[in-house]
Image (cartoon, rainbow, N blue to C red; front, top):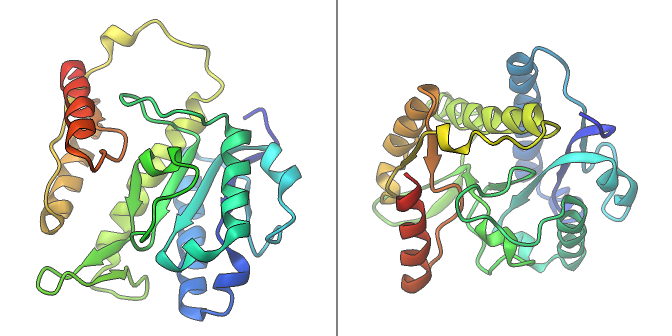
Length: 240
């Protein structure tokens, strides 16, 4: 890649460092992701990460010298004004102004440890495809982050990390490629959304389709309002 750092990973460190379980979760997530990416790409990936390579306010140079960006969402992050400023700077550096409702955006990856209570700012982050590392109890609908130390959840967590790693590796391989005129040869398939208790089944189908060369739609988080949802859905269906 042309820039110094392949991936920039951030979260509100000052807020998280006092929560040992949350910090360990993010550190474990990052360590495992780096290992998987190295295996997929066959070479080391240059990653700079908050709390290790830079602090909350010391990010400008690293932002401008990074190619891809990963950030975390969690309800407790909503109160951190400095984190919001950093996310805005991240969007500016990545050139993210508007999300393509078909192709999404392949430079910023949104990791949801739990669903935020408030809309993400800037608003374009809300539309990014979410990589959800939480589970919802089907009986009381309580949401909790996935436990990386649980043997019962290890298969689910690895599969989710693998999905993310393949999407990131695709961006790393293609980010410097010239624009292609082979759009008509790309095979798109629309995979309908499900209730949360069937998300695991949907993930498996999505994984199988991608393995067989399909580009799976939608590539964004679908809008919550009915009119916008219908508009985006119909645009995706026409592409499939």
